[in-house]
Image 1 (cartoon, rainbow, N blue to C red):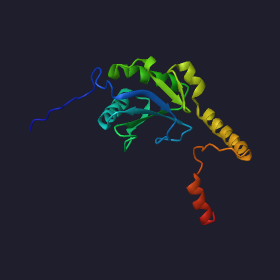
Image 2: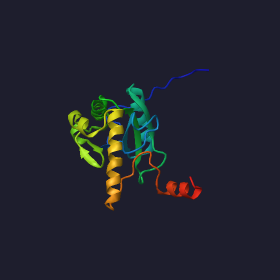
Image 3: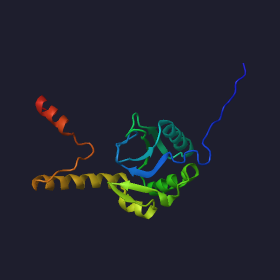
Image 4: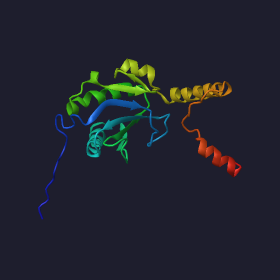
Length: 182
């Protein structure tokens, strides 16, 4: 029996037009650890196979990527999310810019074409800017969540809408807990 090894990879501009030039930061919950320890990045791709290729690109090309995966379903028709997780460290902004920069060989998109979305605001993929808007240490992340909790308490007293925090049970879970008498 003759075994043949097939090495298939991505070539220059293989993903042109397949990736939207935006990456969201911490919009989704981490799978490979606590949110305080892991930054979740999300990219939008135009088909599932492009998502799988991008996952392979990330996992094989970067030893500092903890996990990468494609969303199980479509975000909207013809659009999938690719999740990538990295450690929440001071090197995170540099690594985000590196990912975006390296994607130029696959997409033809330059760093200047990209936008980084943090807390629903768009930023340029610039290390100095990202250091200011992303919690880059577990301690900093926990402090921000605690501060937001205190702000929620003030919002509640003022009759304003509160912001859901990670780890906080949603309305349905709270109702279920109340019904159970817990």
